[in-house]
Image 1: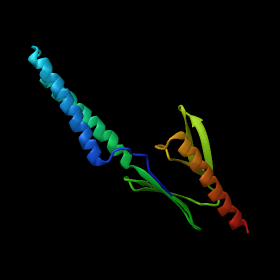
Image 2 (image 1 turned 45 degrees about the horizontal axis):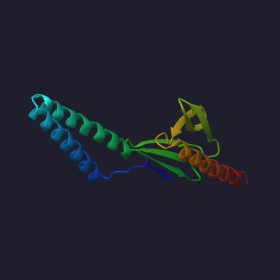
Image 3 (image 1 turned 45 degrees about the vertical axis):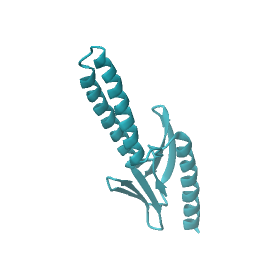
Length: 146
């Protein structure tokens, strides 16, 4: 499974949004300067830069993803872009859905280790992932017993 957050804007769309917001701020600042507020353009440049940086940081947070792989040897969760890889023995891993901090947390647990997966997903998507992982692991564990 490949988990990714939902992203509405493309990189091109983000650039257009930033340009439109900066243009609106500068037009408003120009009107303010025309009426005597000489500092309005300076503050508009500072505000437009801060908004552009904040939107870019939020957009880049959408690059994170998780890849969950189940085979006969292991259940592997690879976190991208950090390339962190966590492995569990598929027969012993348990899928837990805990509520806390105003949202549900989806945890994989085995041998005293816990790993939260899908933190960037919405609650409905996290619940659906919980059901899918539960079914996959139950099928795997029942086949392993045979």
